[in-house]
Image (cartoon, rainbow, N blue to C red; front, top):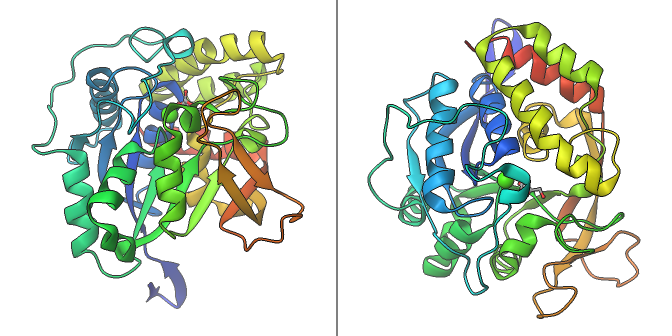
Amino acid sequence: MSILSQGAEQVAPIDLIIDTDPGADDVVALLLAMASPEELNIRAITTVAGNVRLEKTSRNARLAREWGGREDIAVYAGATRPLLRTPVYAADIHGEEGLPGVAVYEPNQGLAKGCAVEYLVETLSNAKPQSITLAMLGPQTNLALALIQAPKIVRGIKQVIVMGGAHFNGGNITPVAEFNLFADPEAAEAVLSSGVKLTYLPLDVTHKVLTSDARLRQLATVDNQASKRVVGILDAYGRPDMQRYGIPGGPVHDASVIAYLIRPALFSGRQIYMQVDSRKGLTYGQTIADWHGVLGQPANVLWIDSADAQGFFDLLSARLARLK
Ligand code: BDR
Ligand code: CA
């Protein structure tokens, strides 16, 4: 829907639910989203176990909400574990509290009453057709459970934007799998097979949007509490990945999903056919992305593979300057 104002066309903000497992980069994504009310109307934040256990991802989501000055946004806690597999966490990258490089404490405000899965079922069942966008920043367990419980909710979904998967340069938790897909491959499959409109931002793109000393200085120049926290988080979060994968800077994975929603022109990709490998074995959780269309199957995702990295950091700096 669009509205006309003073002769110029203005696009109405995207009705957005953010499903997340904070998580260092999740917190950066949440801050970017909360600083962008013209483009994003955040209906709720739903949390899932992933980088760390659910109590901690939910606490960190509530902290991010407090830091963003948006305690009006409800945070619903969701699945404590993946659909079928043994839980896997990423405390080695995100720290025991799930949030490195910054002081973590109990936020003022608690969780919303009720479970994230129930919230999704109810909200999407009652939504106008194709009206709600979901940003999936962790394992896709909550949305998969909602779709299994009430398949008709597909109707209320406009699009689902996933941070996850890897094709060109391998994975970050196994040689071929990316963490969010590996942490719940069956959930990713359930979402993929539901027929929702899907966009994937895999490691292929997020490993091209990296911090550098100059970019961390750019963020630090904003010089408010939000930017200080983001610099602390990204500095600490980037180090293990830089050492392990030999990349020249640290990633900001999940924030790319939010940047994509705000400024899609910063990104490019291709409509392709993709499948998730859920067979137990070395390729468990791998995304098979048919980039060249050799399988002759109809496309089922928009697979983003490149981005204007400096444009991303310019956007992040400008938006953080709006926060306290
Ligand atoms: C993804 O896995 C998590 O550790 C990050 O928060 C991000 O969502 C990157 O592979
Ligand atoms: Ca995440």
